[in-house]
Image (tube, helix red, strand yellow):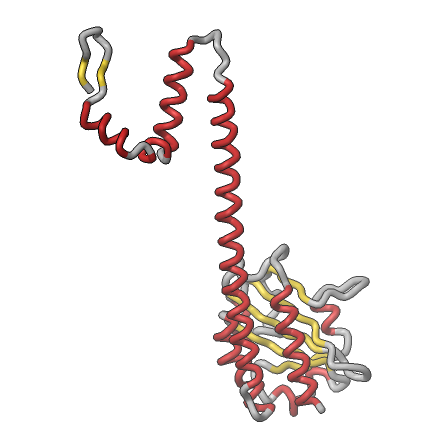
Length: 237
């Protein structure tokens, strides 16, 4: 900037030529436009209401809200896509085994890795209860419990919920065993094996207290539970 004959500052000719050759430089700079608008308002005096300036401020505020909403929608879409891919990979791992023993073994290896969880447990209600060693010895992921355990564990009252997400520190090591000390959140999925059969429970445990918590969507886990049920019905038959 240089000072002219009248004592007022005069813009550098090189800066002026640059702006005139590409005015988008100014128009696309929000801070600069705000400064120009404020200078224009000062030049008009305090008794003049700058309707254009007010309109610009409101448009800027609305644009900022729209941009924030746009970023939130994009982030949610990417997160949902990532979650869908995780569930798809886990479902493929469920379909791979050719024998029931391999299916159970995959729960603590391939399926757990695909779901990015630290523990997977399949609980089957049986009239023989925990003493059913024949089933429990097939895999550390498989547990048997007496009838009523599923509802009690999920704290069901009234209409049962299919999927429950919660943050917790297990009260006992009955479910997760030695991993109980660091399991901090879990997803509980109730399994229905059909008429005449007792229900089951699929548990996903994580050391991350924020991986599963109330308020998160359960649609993808519901789909996973549906596929898991169908796999189990095939093995149980």
